[in-house]
Image 1 (tube, rainbow, N blue to C red):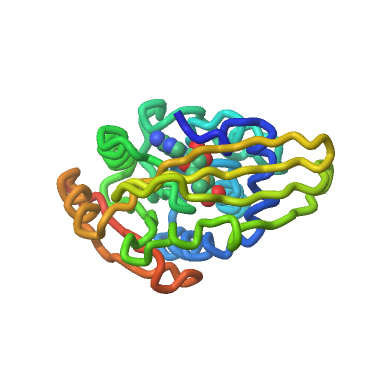
Image 2 (cartoon, rainbow, N blue to C red):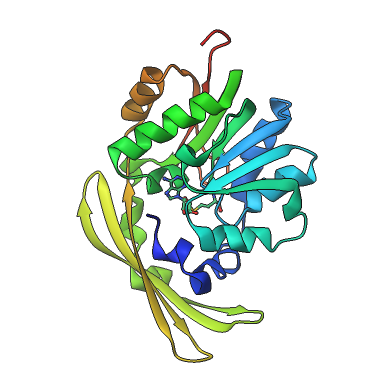
Length: 244
Ligand SMILES: C[S@@+](CC[C@H](N)C(=O)[O-])C[C@H]1O[C@@H](n2cnc3c(N)ncnc32)[C@H](O)[C@@H]1O
């Protein structure tokens, strides 16, 4: 089960407007180009921004996400017919042999139960061709990003075409490391409706992720910074070995 903000139709429709700066995706596009990827699996594709960027470049893309309302948004976008959208988690994937698998925008942190996380790493591995790569990011726990998730720092009013003004803010409700729980609140000016979305993220340590990747047979090639968020993210690049 995914969070209300991704699965409620009214909230899924806000996602792109509330996150307009997607320069975070540049590093992933760059990797797809560097790896000369002809096929990509985007796990936790959400509203499909990255999947559609790749499809525009002629890359064959499969986007998978359990949030149906987010996939509905993706399917409504120009060019969406070039992407294969799958509603579900990795267990819903058909057999694949992609060059690159990705989890952008900290989607990995959304996968909280240990068994789901292991299943995701296993499913991504099975979907890669030998020699294919997995790239994803997770917030570095040492940066304690949740300390900035409060109403004062996050409150904003966004004017959204066709929707009107939306007030939004986030507040942490519990920190029990490695889990951090928080609540987003949205107020729609047009009808005064208030919606909330509760989320829990898992903040994994670098060593833990490296151990998990190795246990699933990946070779960890690099752990990088996110160029657009220096010092804040751990970006993992792992490879399925040629014989494996
Ligand atoms: C912060 S959003 C990122 C969406 C997209 N990757 C982007 O760059 O905009 C996290 C996404 O992870 C998805 N998600 C949650 N649990 C998941 C799971 N077990 N498998 C795949 N995706 C999952 C959510 O539904 C949500 O769409």
